[in-house]
Amino acid sequence: MQKELRVAAYAVCTREGQVLLARLSGGSVAGHWTLPGGGMEHGEDPYDTVIREAEEETGYAVEPVTLLGVDSIRRRYPRKYGTYADFHALRLVYEGRITGGTLRHEQHGSTNLAAWHDLAAVGELPTVGLVDAGLRLWRATGGS
Image (tube, rainbow, N blue to C red; front, side, top):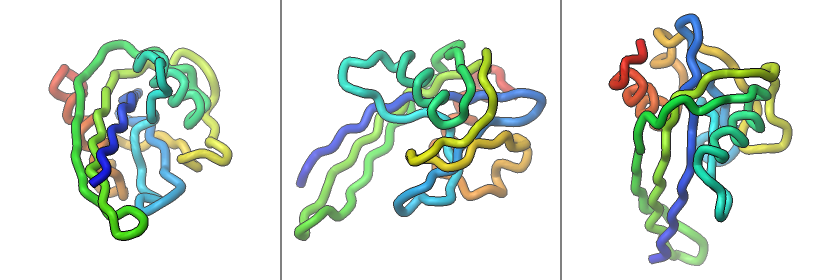
């Protein structure tokens, strides 16, 4: 079984009772909403990752204010030629503050739409588990 590790950094950005989310564009999670962020490049600091990824996916300049916590998931899934992958995702979740930019959608990337959503209505959206995990971490540190 092939072992795969993915380290990523994400931002929980809120304002006036809303949270910023990005809609995934590919694979089995296409159409689901996620937190802005994504995978670290080799040698990249996670702080820089979340800044880069949030700008790519939303158009906003995001300042990571504090590390909310780490979310870790592990899955086994089929790969080519009858093999399987043992996938482990390590996700660093920051509270993010918008410091500039203008909302726009990513072109030709892993997401295709960015939008603000009412925090109270997030549970009604098709989301990936990271959204719940990120909001849980945010609320545990005083977010409301």
